[in-house]
Length: 159
View 1 (cartoon, helix red, strand yellow):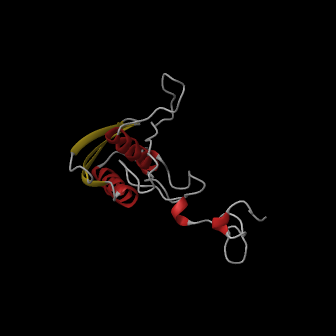
View 2 (cartoon, rainbow, N blue to C red):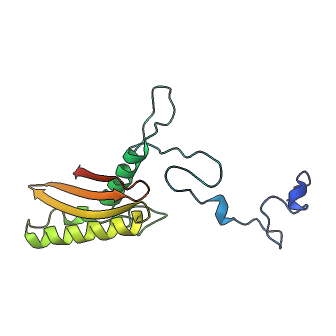
View 3 (cartoon, rainbow, N blue to C red):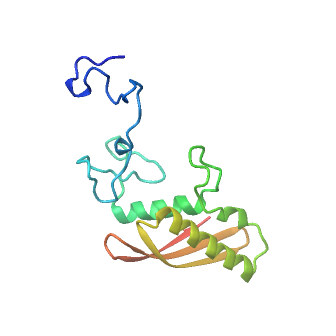
């Protein structure tokens, strides 16, 4: 298909490669860091879990809340759960029903710290992870520093 109306594409169609095939440009699909983008388009941190605000629009989260939401998503997503990113997540819920012991707590701590460093290493520096298992409940305490601001935070997650 030729886009004759757009002189920038030279009659090849928007985004067409030299052979005339449509291709994806990586810079069209990249996201800026939290708090701003290079594209001039304002970022909106979508509240997790997804909600609507009082005006019926997608509810937004401020940066500290958004980082907390991202950590929660990494913690409680199992690898293989996301179709387009099957390696995403920590797999910590698989350890929830293991016998409660210091060994399991150490494995949970290492697993969580590794997953957070892998998926959110550009945003946070993980200082400490503590795991407690009471009956069928798992409590994770994550102490981290936001790299953008240097702000130290402690968040508690329960499942």
